[in-house]
Amino acid sequence: MLGKLTGAALSAALATIMLGPAVAAEKVVICALTFVSSAPLFIAADRGYYEAEGLEAELKFFRAAQPVAVGIASGDCDFGVTGFTAGFFNLAGKGALKVIGAQSREEPGYDFVGFIASNGAYEAGLRSITDLPGRSVAMTQAGSTMHYMVGLLRDKYGWAPDAVPLKALQSVPNMIAAVKGGQVDAAPLPAHIVAKVVGDGDAKLIGWVHEHTPWQLGGLFTSTRNVQERRPVVEAFVRAYRRASRDYHAAFNARDAAGKRTFGPEAAELLPILEAYTKSTPDAIYKGAPFVDPEGRLKVDQLLAQIAWMKSEGLVEPGVDPRTFIDLSFVDGHYGVPAN
Image 1: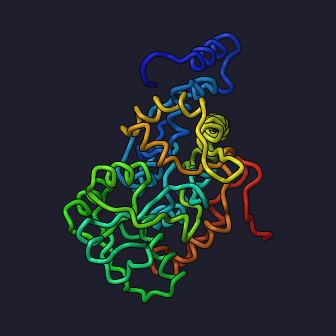
Image 2: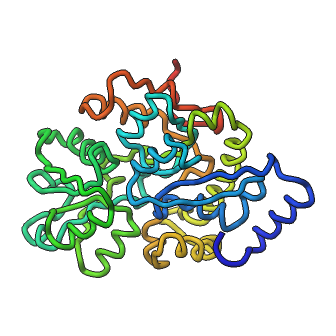
């Protein structure tokens, strides 16, 4: 937790002392990226929601999505939230991982990932996402969320398979530096980073992913071992995560009658928490707060479509069966669940 206990955290701690925790005190390690999309993790830590469930939580942070999956598979992490990647699916297909809920998704009307163009590429005519063919685009790794975003655009607009050259730069900071320095023409990045880079004059925004290809970008994961051997701990974590997701929903998902996003006192209360973890300014957080489902519900059909696409591209092994690692038993009401 950061700083002194808030009133909510103090109440949770007192309740735990007086009534006893929901489960025996258990140490859990949570792994993620320091993005606004990871906000429920930060809120649950600061407001004492893990403690209220009898969990002693440690947060570890990475600079790309794939290491989060590797950390859970290796046992270094117990829970993770980040974007779905080919590497994740391959590990899950071997029996190491379980998808148990949702993180964030590309929802129409909610800016999440935006494509930015280097100043040089913008001046040379890269003014919109549909101008990407023939331009180099940075990503973290092959099979990353960024890779899939470009793939979705390629399929929607009928671009040739090699129309957009992709450069794997291993981390988000490397991607930012490459755009600033003109080593690549464009990059897809989270909105709070877009706000800073564009605001500093180091790049130009050319469009948002949700305007073209909405999809289930991120999920909540744990290890198969945790599901099999520590189910009460997983259930406790999910309760804390969903509680924090509802807080986020009330603060950042609201829209007025005209469809414009609105931010009230709930958002102001959460800003110090998100600033501390993401190192972003309030303005960047407001501009970069994505849609997070308040109950952790997945759009399962979109997740299955991503796995099928990655198989078709040779990024996910043919034998990977999503039915073996998507566990819908911890959260009710998921969307797009197949009949069979």
